[in-house]
Length: 96
Image (cartoon, rainbow, N blue to C red; front, side):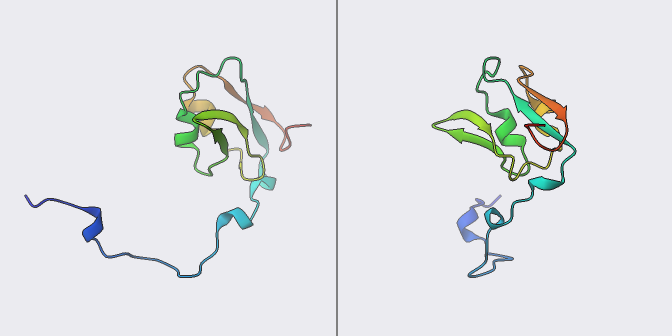
């Protein structure tokens, strides 16, 4: 078996001078929102790994909150959180 190396692959589906999803805030369509409990969080970062929208805020290797501008309320973070530090709450906005 030949040695596989990513550097040898041809790039595909690249869009030069393309944009970024950071320009488009997509969190306004959720009907539930995640609530993160800092005190029960074990900082395993599993929520960050599984979040399909990159909405889990991490700084210096620790979860610091949720970016509601991009969270779509899918609930994957709640399902995957081993210490159950994230719970989904009703409503699209965290303040009500």
